[in-house]
Image (tube, rainbow, N blue to C red; front, side, top):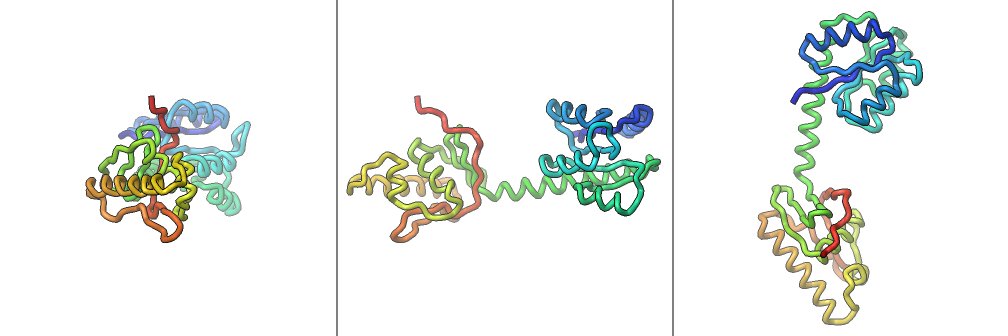
Amino acid sequence: MQEKLILIEDDSELRESLLEFLTLSGLTVTGVGSAIEFYQALNIEHFDIAIVDVGLPDQSGYELSKYLRKNTTMGVIILTARSSAEDRIQGYDAGADLYFVKPVNSQELIAAIRNLIERLNCRRNEQQEEMRKDWFLDKSEWTLTGPNGLICKLTSKELSFLEELISKHGNPVTRESLMIRLDYNPNQYDNRSLDALVLRLRKKIEEKGCHGDPIKTVHAVGYCFSAPVRTSHFPPRKNL
């Protein structure tokens, strides 16, 4: 996949010169002249690295860098005429991966960009590998995916049961709370229904070859989901 860069530089002559050089070096680059143009472009397209001038007309490049570090996974390169140690420290405090002072050696800039791309790719691969170790509850598809990638289809009550456990972030959920969530009456029959639901769900998980049952019985309390888990952000579908 070709990484995409965005250059935020208000000096149009310098911007066009850098765009031409970066493009001829095989990089995919978009150029904008202000912070507002950058935010507009970010709403339309994904970028992997931002090259940020500090002295923008509408917002400090330091503030823009802080926004990027807080809200995105983009790499940040500050490119500015400000060369003091205090400015460099402020740039790195704002979240910059690299700090270059104008005029910059073009070959050095290209080498730094390629090195940053490699580091970002390694970081993303590590994050993806960590995510594969987690369980994943997909609320829209009614599925639970194990760390081995195999998928368990869920009934509506199984989904509600797991949602209730996962919402407590590893803390136990009482049987009474689960009975209410699942619309069970607190009588002996429906108590057995809850146990039967847990038994069926554990069997599904076991049949998918997932080692380490994440649904733990908490004696005299209820149940908890004891493993790392992610969930989709979409609500459950209505059962038509």
